[in-house]
Image 1 (cartoon, helix red, strand yellow):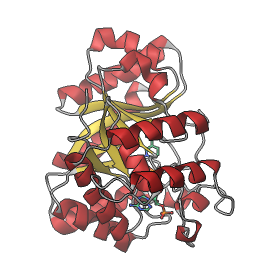
Image 2 (tube, rainbow, N blue to C red):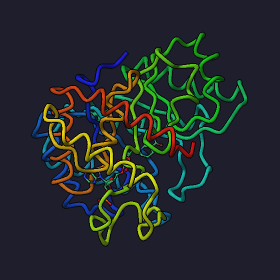
Image 3 (spheres, helix red, strand yellow):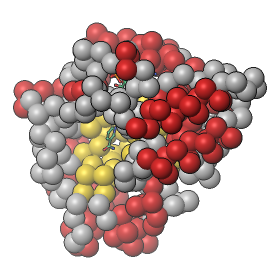
Image 4 (cartoon, helix red, strand yellow):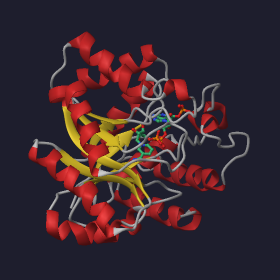
Length: 311
Ligand SMILES: NC(=O)c1ccc[n+]([C@@H]2O[C@H](COP(=O)([O-])OP(=O)(O)OC[C@H]3O[C@@H](n4cnc5c(N)ncnc54)[C@H](OP(=O)(O)O)[C@@H]3O)[C@@H](O)[C@H]2O)c1
C-alpha cells in the first residue's frame, strides 16, 4: 500500500517534439535531474501526433540530453510494441519483436534503461500473451523491471503471471474524470501502480490559463467550453483554502496530484509538465503533499469524481 508521503514523480515525455520544443525538454530535464529525481517515462510512439516524420522524436530528444550531459543514472521506463505514432491500435507484441526492441533500447540507453513495459494490448489470446511475457522474462533476467500499460484484459496477464511471477509496474490513467484502477482488479495490492493523465490531458480551472499550445487543444479537447467539474472544484477549493492548516490550492493540477497521491495503491505519478514553471510548481506541491494532511480534501475530491466520472 502506498503512502501519499512517499509518492514519487516520473517525468513524462508524451508531448516532447509536439507541443514541447527541444529546448524546453532540455530545461525540464535539467530542472528535474537537478532536484535529484531520476525516473523518466518514454514510449516508442511519442509524440503520438500522427506525423510520421516525428516517429520516435521524443526518445531522440532524451538520448541527446543524456549524451550532452554524460548521464548514467536515469531510470527510464520504455513502453514498447508500437510500430508508428498514428494513435491507432497497430502494434507488434510478438516475442521476436519485443526482443529486438529490448536489444535496441539497451544499446541506446545503456545503464539509464530501468523498465521495459508492454504498451497497449487489446489481445485476449493466452498463447500470444505468453510469448510476449517470455520476452519480458529475458528483460528481467537482464536486470530490468517489467511493466504493463493500456492492457484491455489484465486478468489474462494476471492468470499467466502465476507462471512468471513478475512484480509488475503498471501505468493507469487515474484522474477526477476517469480511472482505470478498477479494470486492473486482478493486480490490486500486488503491482506498483503509476498514474498518468492526472490533469485529464490539460484541463484548467481558469479559462484564461489556456494558451496557444494548450495540451488539451492539441489532443482534440474543447478548450472553449467549461467542463461541468470545474464549477464543483472551484467551490471545493474555495472552502479548502479557508482552512489554515493546509497550503493554498489553486489549480486542476493540484487537485489531480492530491487525487493520485492520496490513493492508497498508487506509488508514482507521471507528470506531463510543458513548462519549467509548471514542473517547479508540481514538484513543490508534491513536497507539500508529503508534509501536510490533505485527507479531508481528498474525500471531497472522491465525491466530486463520483459525480463527474465518465469511465
Ligand atoms: N501509459 C500510457 O498509455 C500513457 C498515456 C498518456 C500519458 N502517459 C505518460 O504520462 C505523462 C503525463 O500524461 P499527460 O500528459 O496525459 O498528463 P496530464 O497531467 O493529464 O496533462 C499534462 C498537461 O497538464 C497541464 N499541466 C501539467 N502540470 C501543470 C501545472 N503544474 N500547472 C498547470 N498545468 C499543468 C499542462 O497543460 P498545458 O501544456 O496545456 O499547459 C500539461 O501539458 C506523459 O507525458 C506520458 O509520459 C502514459
